[in-house]
Length: 499
Image 1 (cartoon, helix red, strand yellow):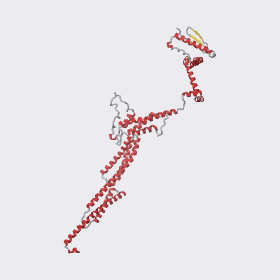
Image 2: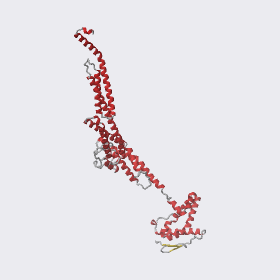
Image 3: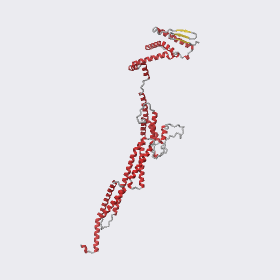
Image 4: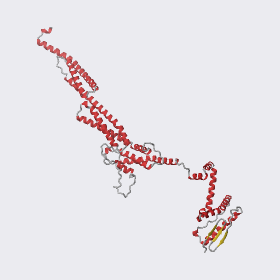
């Protein structure tokens, strides 16, 4: 009321001064209020965006809707907090809020895209790693063709799923194409990484393949070495299978480009070209080792897993480490043959035929009988040599038998007498053997035959006193053409030219 007594201009000036002071006092609170509203709106945007994404709405549309709603809410709050007497502008706070919302949306977008990419990369890794490893371990002729088909199928499936997942992000075409290309590169890198891992274990895989083919038949049953198997052929097949596995793991073949790796390995290692020293006179161009190189023909260096030199070294080591299995198979085959040979030795068969089974078992149970038989064998051998049985049969079978029968007992008694004298220490001097007939003159040969006949007759006369049945009377007569002697058992006529 007191202000009514003042001039209008004074009152107005004082009013403005008071308002100015009041606004200065209220402005910090106003600024704080705007900051609080900005933070509250930003948190509201985060919550709404998360809920919207959980409901399955598209990311870009969710960001737009949440942004509009939050900005509208912020404007209303700013309007409520505005002071009528002031012309304070909240656009800077609003602009900062917009930038904060965009930054948060961008970070969430990047995180969601990264999660999506990681998800599909993991899916590709799981879909490719185990099948590729299995295919490389199998090492068949169409291994890389199967890997290419698998890679294409799984990559297309991942790209299709990725495209559907990022549709809500409303990516521009260049960004989308770049992401798809990165996904394809990742799928290829998974295959290449697995191939390089398997190439590092190629020697172990080759030995496993050799053992599988060598020790198991076509029905995957354990092979029994019964003696009917051709170990050479089986070994060749097993080595060939191992070599094909080596050729599969020697290079990466994802581009469907033909190469000659398998042919070079088969011709160089299986045909025995490698390891044969070249002659110094051989032309160098004709004897060049195709494996004496660090790269394969028609294979880029970045796709080479095992160089030709490494293949050569691995093959030598492989053959050295599998040689034991081949030796064991040969030994098992021989042992099987020996164990299944149910026939006894030839001497045992002869003994059973002559003696019978019971007598043969009796000999085995009584080794003394074997000693007696051995002594008898020695005596018979001595008689054979002493009587020259093989020479007696030169004149015919009947004449030989008669001559042997007539000389058997005297020769046997003479042999026993000589053995007795040798046992007493007075060996009888052995009669000198006649020289070969080719070196003796005809006259000397006649004299020798006469002396032999006379000494044989004297021996028979000495034994006739004890063995009457075996006495032999001999009459010797000389003729102009030769010598004739006769006995009751045998009559011979030998004609010898006398000079």
